[in-house]
Length: 378
Image (cartoon, rainbow, N blue to C red; front, side, top):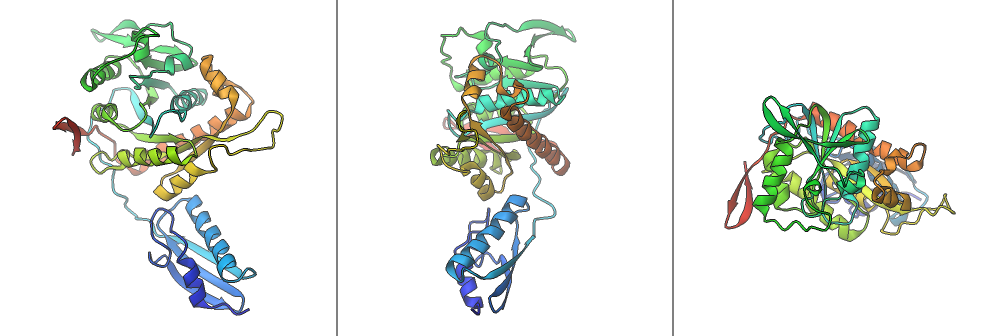
């Protein structure tokens, strides 16, 4: 069969360019098409430099031409990347904490996706790699980090540093921890307005003796709201990671979480997206994967938003049990879970290093309130 260039172009109109929102023909990504009988060469240029985007583009072209034009076509796809040489700098204004090198916000668009579980295991994995790590439980209304680190009964002590009284974080598994949960009773609800919650957070941030840390992880509340703005007003966030499950409801909210950090007036670098509860594998069927909440939803969202995909964590009963018993699953030596969290952690470290190499130091944003609503401005 002799292939026709017009048919090829029509087929490519059904493919969306990753992260650009237009089809390949409309966006100008298709640079050249050459046909020889049943052979075709397609030259494509995309702006997304990630290996995943390049691979997805190639696979989509092969699949589409085989399905819509000729199933036995011999296809060669040449994908080149035309990424900006000087990306827009993520300049945020700010005030660093002495001794803390990187502040990573762990966020989620909605509750129940395992954000705190990911934070705890990420912290433990970083510590196992030799980094000095701290966790600030910024989820004022639902603190769970003390349970996950088995320090519910602990109370931070006061220490004198350079003539000032400071809180000493609780430490377990090589991780320093502070949480509003240390200062409330287990059955006591925290019923605070935004300014009071922000004041409590500022005390845990600036009135604490964190010491030298390579990473301070912030376990943010779910959603996008006042606490998030208060944190970004107070701290120079190095970068943010967004946790989601693969299901559409969670992905829609995760997309909003990414959008919050990427607003021009906030501009916190998004290090990537983590897919939690990616699949379920029963103990009796170790080779089977059941995609209960959908397959690769967060991975595809990362591609669409042009942010890195940091890794996937399976839905495993022992992760929940480990969190409930206060011993994070990443401590389970020689298990697939330990390996999964190690891969995730390595990716976070790599993206942090890349972010620090490519972008200027971050600062805290300036926030004002107008008519009772938080408005963000430079």
